[in-house]
Length: 390
Image (cartoon, rainbow, N blue to C red; front, side, top):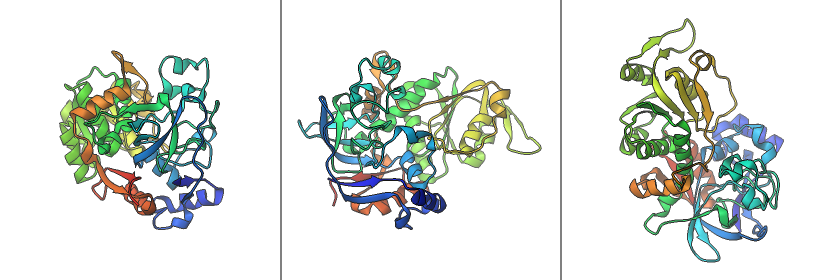
């Protein structure tokens, strides 16, 4: 198989941290990513099949890994070297059926019986056995040495990870099903009964969260924070009633919620009032800070963007008794629907294909990753690898 393989070393990690988002395109020798011919991954056991990826997305977590911004918290539950890529649409080698991959490597793929308590409840994203079983440690496909990933021409997946793609859903929408399922899960985690929400960040996850909110709680008023023109247009198209720049977010929410704004001697203002729930989708300190300072007392802040290590003032959390909760992957059900089922339903109702802004062959990976690193400024959203391209 041909693939992009990631293997972190201390010198390359330090170089990536120094180069930051300039790597790998501008300084390709610094990146721990290598294009090459590698052995096909072996089928680990019964119920596993080969999958040939068609399209595979470049996720924010992938970019954090490449730029050296990812937390070392995850190091015990990944195995290297691995082929990245967990947003995948492809075909099963045994049947030719088009599928998307649910990448979490939980108890069922690992052959663990009885399953852990989380898997027993259907909450596969919370599996406690992701370092055990028939494959190497790896919280997901795309972070596991044994399975391959979407940035390669072949991977292996367990039957429990595969979801058939409806015939009327194009690949450009199907490749977004995995992150859309994450957005659905986040909306269910918020469980807001209030009329106003904030979505901070309008990259892929922010826009898909807007789509999920509009589909699941259509009466809610959505204020979206977007930095770039294309993001603003897309946020409105997907259901946001108000789209503002980061600098204008505080005052816009103050006006729309009739809240008092307090300005400390040092630091940013905060609202005595605000939205009922906020979704942090950018994965940075400034975005989370905005959510904490604009959410009403005892409101809920949902952390959907992968957080990078940093410092944040938690005084608003303490003072207004906010709930700060994480939303990782999927698995929750509502009225018998799995989050992937709900994602398919939404994707068949809303045209998501415009979110896929560019497709690259693996041979142009430096250009693809550079594009993804700077997607917002380039008025792009999702950059993907097209495994059929040479």
